[in-house]
Image 1: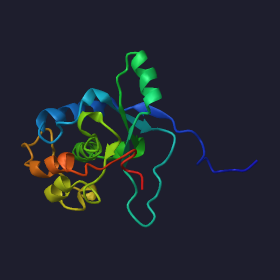
Image 2: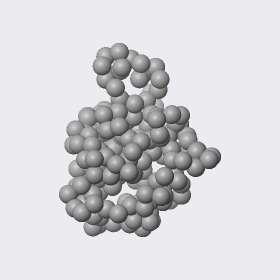
Image 3: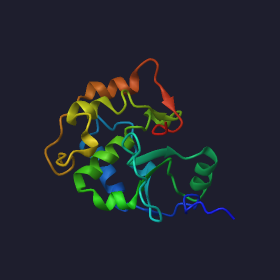
Length: 180
């Protein structure tokens, strides 16, 4: 028997209910940015049985959104569950993040949701989303004092960058936007 050091074990999840509230509040406060997002179609799952992987050459992925397969979506819909997207986050990370970082990470992930839920997921327009980089810089994900998006003043995102992202002629989608 080969010992894989636990890396091959199935992930165990819990639903992060707070994330659903955050996504709904973000959509309510930023409807022109998150116009393509239906909060009830997203569930955020926390990995409970694995430590976050250490980043090698580049910062590691903090979260990952995925579109549920059509067959799984059909099964869920049959049971009255209308989820189309899952966001996966390690619970160790989630518990270590303050409210503002949680908001920004979730904003990033739901920004992958395409208009009308068509096709795969929206790719980054640069190695992230330009509207977020313009707002807080390329290092937004590791900044200590991110603005509170929900309880602070309404953040002035560049809405033209979001429109360009969703409406460009070559509207590029991929099946799993955060996988390289």
